[in-house]
Length: 351
Length: 255
Ligand SMILES: Nc1ncnc2c1ncn2[C@@H]1O[C@H](COP(=O)(O)OP(=O)(O)OP(=O)(O)O)[C@@H](O)[C@H]1O
Ligand SMILES: [Mg+2]
Image (cartoon, rainbow over all chains, first blue to last red; front, side):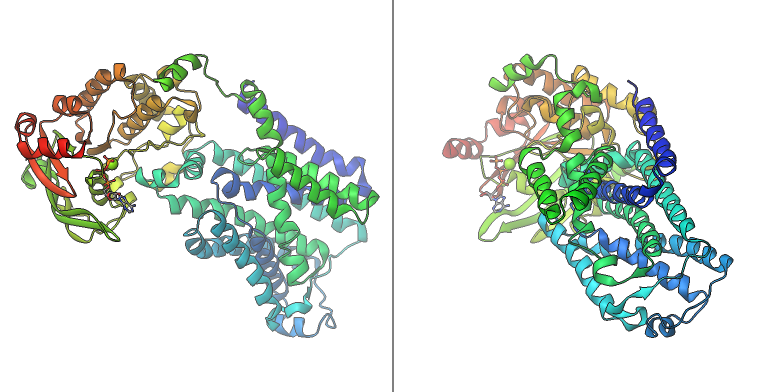
């Protein structure tokens, strides 16, 4: 099967599910919205983690930054942010519909831009690190951000911020935020697929396989890494903005910079599905999310054990993930060629 | 060619370069010229400092002393990718390729980065002149049949050929080859010598070659320099070196 046709079918399937899912199962709109968020997290993490071999543990940083950028933008548009936050929700600001939706759109866009800009700023420093040092360095950035914002009174510190209240009747907000997550996730997948079909995608893979070689061939490795990271940050920032508005209340440690939950999940999901592939992180995110929701419902108390078990089995028994494992088993189905003349290579190797 | 005559006809000029690793003095006061358009050889016993000199030239590490010029321009303070983009490339003694990518992908990403507009990075892969060139060069090194295979699955010798083809894809002005025949099936060595000569003649790439195999280097290079214990022992034509007592002693003494 031709790769474009193959990817097209999967896109069509995802879009169909995205539209029909909440219509057929309206009670699960929130769960499906979160599934798109999981797909966003795993797939954008994979741009650097899977394709370029830079395993960040701190991409949640962009999520939190986006959340706070949007909060400041949306509130700041109509009110003084410091006064708003210091009142701890005592001030109820009335947003008109136009103000609310203009603010929401603007907030989401600024969140993407802000997260992207910061990713470049930090990227210049952390991309000097490799392997485990990079992982720990990025984790440090995310942890520090949570702590710093906890101490920053202007945005309410550890007390958090109440986001502007969604206007209109109660059920409408979940549809809006669902649509935003759905469109953002499909857009991110579209951008990633396009990116992997360019020279840029090849450069990320070259950096993953042998960065010193890539440098020796004159490739602007830092430039590629920064652009790759800033694209991931752009989507994560916007996702954070949508999530903050959907939840309605944001605070730094549990909601904006949850390094030990979402921050780790995004890595676990990409690994589960198969990192370094377009659809692996999507598959991993869907599976992980379903298991997570099921265990939360039916195995309460054991849910962390179940998730931990998945991660351990994944890491110990099939590190290449589900898609990676399938690709090793049926390479032809993935468009890979295997040597039909392996004998010659073996003979030569034996010399 | 203007550039060729501008710098006394040398594309690389190394003057008084020294380099030590902690206590080990790997290169002492080395001077060597690599003339435009020719094939120049570098020989010397194991540990005599050949790879160290290559590393110094391509900016892999800072040198302790001396100067290195490429086309008349001082490059000893530049970094590896900058020097590569000027048109000076090296292959590695321990072959280095992108082992999880197919041969064609290895070739495509090896395209020259010199004067390349940034927007080129978003050009579609697997299309156009790049693919054609990649296929020609894989054909040239005899790997066309293997072009869709994952490069890490190739034999060591084939990986070496791939690395050579990748270097040519980059359209360098000068290519530094660190032991191109080491580990290659002896029956294939003559073919490789032939390809090195053709790369030099047909593609106009100046070659600077480290080689252990005496027969190979005598066959290939017009001018050869010999290192011993990190110092420049002698420079001359293959005939001169073969009959130079110091060179003979260095090799005999080392083996
Ligand atoms: N990274 C390093 N750190 C410390 N010492 C090094 C390093 N690289 C090389 N050396 C030492 O420098 C000296 C020269 O090494 P070099 O690799 O340049 O030799 P060579 O002529 O390329 O040898 P060979 O023919 O074995 O490849 C040797 O004594 C070696 O042990
Ligand atoms: Mg060496």
